[in-house]
Length: 214
Length: 78
Image 1 (cartoon, rainbow over the protein chains, first blue to last red):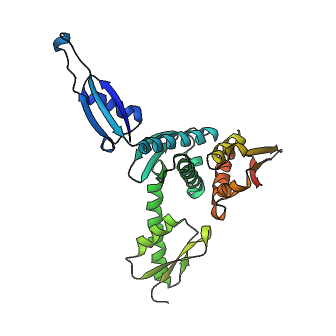
Image 2: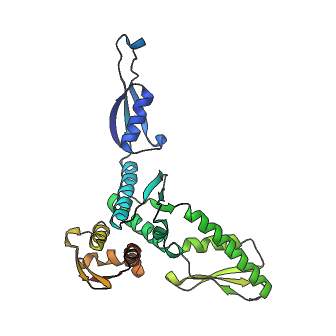
Image 3: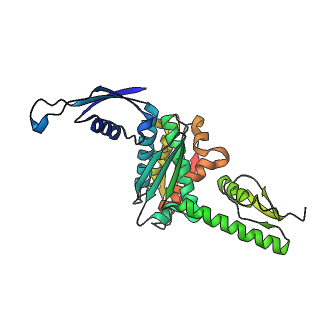
C-alpha cells in the first residue's frame, strides 16, 4: 500500500487529479480519505481553502498498467510500426489492451493472427518479468479477436455439417489452445459429432468425427 | 530498421543478466543474420519451452522485416 496526498478545488476534483496522476481508471481499487473538505469563497469573496484528500493505493495496480503501456509502445516503436494504444483496461487478473493503426493493422495481426499472438506472448513475458505480477495481458486490434471467434464458430459448424452429411471425419488445421477450446465448446452440444484434439504442441489440431462411427 | 535494438530491448527485460546480452549483426544483400549471445544461465529464458520464446521473437522480427523485403535470421548462441 502506498499513499499520496492531493489538493483540488473540490473533493471530486482532487480525486480525479490523483487517479489521473497514477494512471488508475478504476476508482474502486483505491481507498480515499478526505482530510479537508475545503471551502469555496462565495462570489470570489471570502477565504477559499482547497480540498485535500489522501489516497491509498496498491503499488502493483499502477505498475502493471504503466509498464504494459511502456513495453507495447517501445516494441511497436522499434518495429517502426505506426500504431497507438486506443484503450487500456485493468481488471482483477487481466489487462486488456486495444491497439489501433491506420496503416499497419494487417502487419500487427499477421497471417492468421500469428504476429498478434507473438506480440501478446512477448508483452506478457516482459511485463511479468519486470513487475513480478502474473496478470494476463490481452492484446487486440480493431476487434480482431471478436471477428476471429465468430469466423471460427461459423467454420466449425459448417465443417460439422459436412462431416454429418458425408459420415467421414475431418481434421482442421493446427490451432492454439484458446481457439481449440472455442471449437470444442461450439460443437459440444451437437450430439451428431464428436471433437478430439490430436498431435503435439503447435501442431495440435482438432478432428471432427461423426458420432456414429467410433 | 534497427533489428538489433528491437531484439536487445525484448531480450534484456527477460534475462537475469541483461548486461551480458550482445548481438552481432551480419548484413548481407538479401538477408541479415543476428547472432544473439546471452549467459548460459539465461539461454532458457530466451528460447523457452519448445522454443516458444525464440519463435515469438522471430515472428516479431519478421513482421517488421516484411516492410523492407529483407530476410532476417535470428541465431541464438552460447
